[in-house]
Length: 145
Image: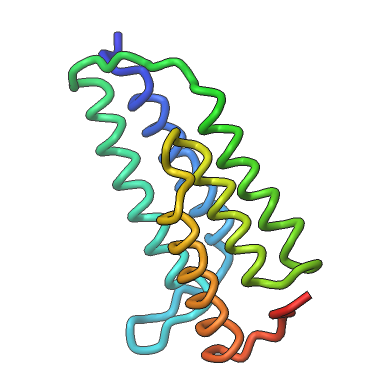
């Protein structure tokens, strides 16, 4: 029997995802390194994913057993909440507010992390994302509400 079920099943899942990817990529032209076609990069990604899945599966079968920790509700809720805050604020309040709201919501996952450092990081990340996406890449989205 497997020594580490989490790694074993995780590796098998990665192998299954890679296999499904190869299955869907089979009818597409691959091309060459000089002239890559539609399936070139996705095939390489599937191969790397399959190799990673094989390594994780081997680790699960041969490695030391790990204790599975219980799920902590607060971090899980804060991370899922951060994703929801970002999704809800992006169209309504703009990218800077969505990024800042997501960072501040995610900071609540760890006690004592919601302080001035989180606010400073949220402000810097919001400014950086706005500069990169709106002004650097010219992606049209709302900056201010």
